[in-house]
Length: 232
Image (tube, rainbow, N blue to C red):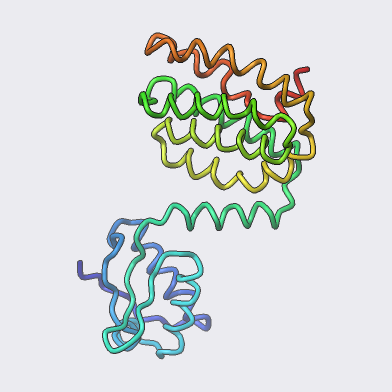
């Protein structure tokens, strides 16, 4: 697609260049993977120096919007989707924020019930089998607080995967590091046993077949040290 870029005359020209490219992307005039050109070509189109383009590209690359290819055939293109990159970046920002345990629990309580409800209607047989495996595995981790918490976080992520919603998967994935940091200290043998005792009966009901799927949203998402501790 040919886009009529406007010549830039502002003091912070690189910011305006970056802003125009961002707007074009969100207006769907630029598509993932689309070729933008070389530094020299973009400098000519925007009416700025290559240094200005380089600054703009650096900012866009840091945001994950453009990929830079170096060498004789080098140039710039709009990046393609990379969920892991999004998850990592969001997770780092949450860490920098110093998210509190209370904020984490509020976020999980807002996200997980809906995620679980979606998974109840969409989970495949293999996904239900994986959820069952994670619940059963928790029995072997009662005296391993860190392992029990990691298994619980894996369980929540497996539910998000079963929901079929990529945004929810990314959100839960980005909270993984914070969950491990905040929930592990709460996990004791008593708490872990309480959580398993609540999760296993529900898991047995789910294994009876498709008729059990609607129950997924009631108790299985409780395979979490904090929820177990909070409801003892």
